[in-house]
Image (cartoon, rainbow, N blue to C red; front, side):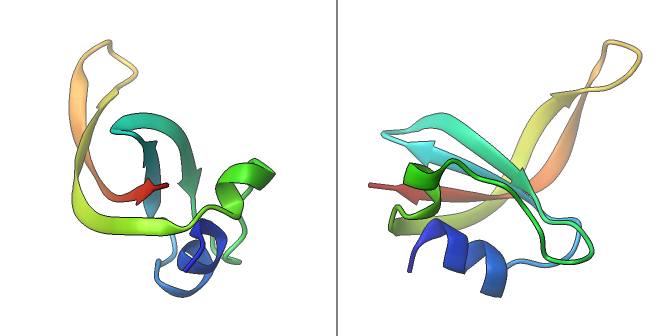
Length: 76
């Protein structure tokens, strides 16, 4: 399954998807209410090796960090 197919069929509205290649974060997608998202072509066509659910630290408006739930996709 490609990253694009995974995001269209396996994610829910308002889900944050973090895409990793070789263990490094290379892209992120936020799934909006119409299942729309934008990805670079090479990443959209990449095959998903593994998926997992976890948390990512993001900076809040006050300069602190919060943990946000997300789906990690590892690609080839």
